[in-house]
Length: 201
Ligand code: ATP
Image (cartoon, rainbow, N blue to C red; front, side, top):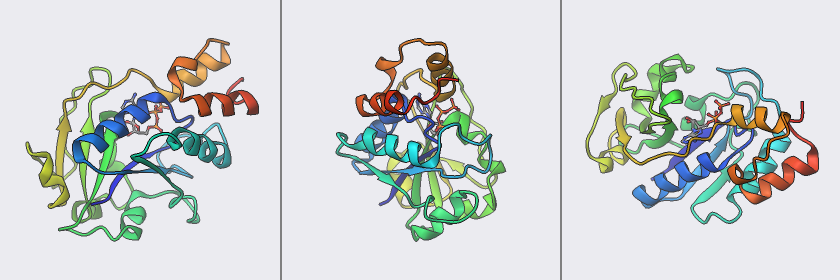
């Protein structure tokens, strides 16, 4: 079973680490933390690929279930999930489980070649900050048993676990305003942000 938690990670924060660990614990699996090197569906990241990669590595360093993955950094052009799924050999009966927050899940229907996701992945979706979306991408079905995700592609399970109310955008704004964000970042990430003077403007 391959489980992916993808993100721009600009910067990676304790909300990501918490969500990925919850997924790892309930699925009893390691989690590939895939850095979206050149995200196709949002504004260009503020920090460079190298900085985001260093921060992701630092965040995973003491988390035994979390494995940083440069799979999307090694490809040319925009980072498309469908191409990552193909590289990971995801198939209908051996789908990759893609873990994401409901804000990201809401946009899955806009992903490149989204129709092909149906035959290659299933989704574990966590609810962030009271969002209660239950809209499914075309063809996907909601299941009430987590174990189905690893056997059948095109399935979606909504986890009920509480998430941390942390967002990378507000974190960057806090840093620019000089507010302390130490309690929101893994220690190695905080060090990297300070050392490189990231997000100050
Ligand atoms: P931004 O606030 O700029 O949108 P972000 O905090 O959502 O950034 P991303 O790297 O875009 O960070 O998110 C990657 C994935 O992590 C997405 O699936 C997103 O829903 C999820 N995620 C982000 N923050 C949290 C959180 N606090 N709890 C659970 N999931 C989260």
